[in-house]
Length: 371
Figure 1 (cartoon, rainbow, N blue to C red):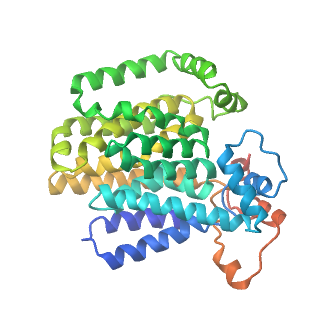
Figure 2 (tube, rainbow, N blue to C red):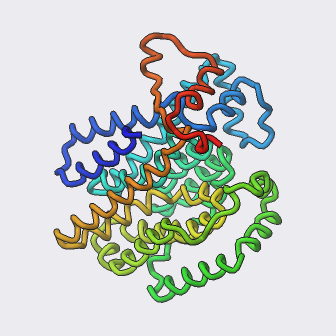
């Protein structure tokens, strides 16, 4: 667990240091090794490895993902190389995104890792992660208003994970930054109240009519904590704080930053989607597509604070990230952490049963955490 907390602290401390190309590259490389080469951590890889080698018939899998795994398996490519290369691809996309939109990569990276990144790369919902990585490449074309290219990439992302269907409506959200503040606040409150009074039922009914296959995926988890969420949470408070400050500094954000209006618009969309996700946690898979925008907008609005307040706010977010990280990784799927590099060096790879049971046998988590 200390590995995860240490990474958050490193990102926090480095957010105060003037950027240095060689230092940045070194830190990002080591972070990539940690996130992308994890071996026996995570939950979904067990199923994905079975699918890869034909042990499970994955009826509902998206076609491009199935086609790719079939081809690679036929060519004799080991599942773990496929898994690692896929994660490296996505990690590079995220790093490029933060480098492009943030003048200090460490603060948004700290926020991203604590709230989203450790789950996406360590627990690793693999197809969802691949779809997000592909989608983020397409955002370049959305910004340039090259809609045909954008939609082609979105279609490709959809063929890796059905949650990418949400990306098809994003072009309609590009002008949110032009909407008056009082209307944005009013809509957020309205949508919150709508969900508070069980409005999610109507959303799910609509989803079942329009996209029955996707609704079936949600229905599989009926009765679990992935479907029964809680709209009121600490995470909601953090996002309301974000909404308040991004609206307070909206003019400064839009005028100072070259693509500030772009970040502003999709940060707002993320905040709306996160309301739905708190009601049905499984739908966070949809909100994840815009999670980097949320992390960058926080960097933007705190940049307008004076030095004293800036230090306090950074410290506040560091404590928040440490708390979120501790809560997230207090699980058999994160602790103990193992990396594939020692096994590559020794050229000795444990069998599936050993790997599948390793964390359950060796975790320091209490027994009730394994249930």
